[in-house]
Length: 461
Ligand SMILES: Nc1ncnc2c1ncn2[C@@H]1O[C@H](COP(=O)(O)OP(=O)(O)OP(=O)(O)O)[C@@H](O)[C@H]1O
Ligand SMILES: [Mg+2]
Image 1: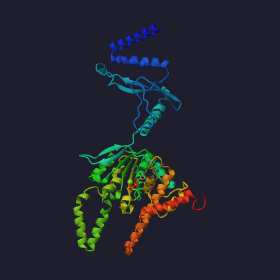
Image 2: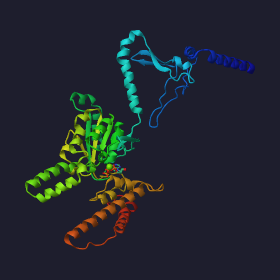
Image 3: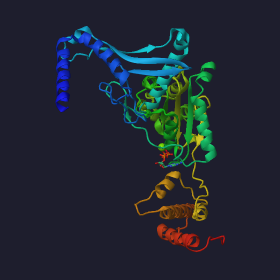
Image 4: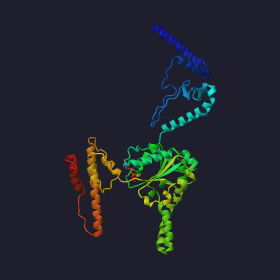
C-alpha cells in the first residue's frame, strides 16, 4: 500500500513539474480555474486563510475580514433571488516572462444571476452591496485623533488612537446624559433634513464649566458614541485665517473639530470689546488711556495678525464650513461669560452644555457621610475620580470612599480657612492658624466611625 502511495505522489509531482515547466503562464490560469471548479465540486469545504488572500484585520477592527481566493465562488441571496460571486483574474501577457509572474494580473469579481432578474439586481441589489460595503468600511475604519502641528511649509496632522472615555464612564445627571445622546443621534441621522433646509450638516456644542468637570471627557465620549474622528485644533498654532480655512477643508466628514479653552486660545473675545473701549475712551477724551491702549495694541500687533474673531466666525459658519458634512464643532471654556456673544450664538454653538460640580447619587452605606460632608464643598468629578481610584491592589471600595471623604473634608477645611483669611483681610484681623490636614483627618475619623463602625446618624444600622 505504501509503495502504491509513494508511486502516485511521485507521478503527481512529475506531472505538476512538467505543467509548470512547459505550459505558458497565460494558459496555466485556465487549467487552474477549471481544475479548481472540478475540485470544489467534490470538496464542499472552504479553507481559510486561503493561499493568496489571508484574513485581514487592522489593530482596531472589530471583525476579521475574509476575502476570496482566485477562482473561489460564493453564493448570495437577495429578495429570494440566488446569485453567485466568483473571484477571477486577467492574466497580464508580459508577466509570463517576468521573475514574479502574476504580480501585474488584474483581479475582478464576476456576478452571475438569472437574466430575468436583471432589473432587480442592477437597480437595488448592487446599491445594497455598495451601502453594505460602505457601512462595513465605516465600522472597521480605525478612528484617529488629529492635532494641527505647525511644520515647515504646511500644517500636518499627527495621528494616534482616540481616548477611551464613553457616556457610560461619564458621571453626569442621567437626564442630561440622555438629552445629549439623543441630540447626537438626531444629528447623525439628519443628513436629508440639513440638505432640505440648505444648511451645512454640522452642529456646534459649547461645553463650559469649572476645571475638572469633564469637558474633555465629554468630547471623547461624543466621538466614541458616534464613531467620529477627533480634530483637536490648537488655535494658537494657526498662522492666520487662511491657514484656519485650510485646516477645516482638510478635516474629513464623521468628525469632531475641537477647540479647547476657546476663551484663552487667542485674544478673540477682547478684540471687539477693546475696539469699543477705545472708541468710548476717545469720546470721553481720556487721551492718555486711549494712548496707553493704542501703545499696547502696537506692542501686540503681531498677535492680531493671527486668527481673528471674524476668521473664526467664518470658520464656523461661513461658506467654508459647508464643504464636507456630518461634522461637530465643539468649544470648551472655563469662562463662558468672557466669550463674545457672536461666537456662541445659536447657529454657531447650537447646544450649550454646562459641566458642573458633582451631585452624588445614592449608592452606598457611606453615602450619608459623603452627602453630609459634601454640603457647601465644591468638588469636581476630576477630584472624585482621583480619590476613588484605588492607589494599591489591596485597596477596596470602602478604602476609596474613605479617601474621598478625607479629600472632601480637606477641601471643605481649605475653603473654610480661605473664607476666614478673606474675612480677616477685609477686617484687618490675623486669621487663626490651623493645620488643615490635622483638623480634617480628626473630623473624618469622627464622621466615619459614626457611620460605618457604629450606627448611622439617623439611628438606622
Ligand atoms: N463627569 C466626569 N465623569 C467621569 N470622570 C470625570 C468627569 N469629569 C472629570 N473626570 C475625570 O477627571 C479628569 C479630568 O477631566 P477632564 O479633562 O474631562 O476635565 P475638564 O473639564 O476638561 O478640565 P479642564 O477644564 O481643566 O480642561 C479626567 O481624567 C476624568 O477621568
Ligand atoms: Mg479639558
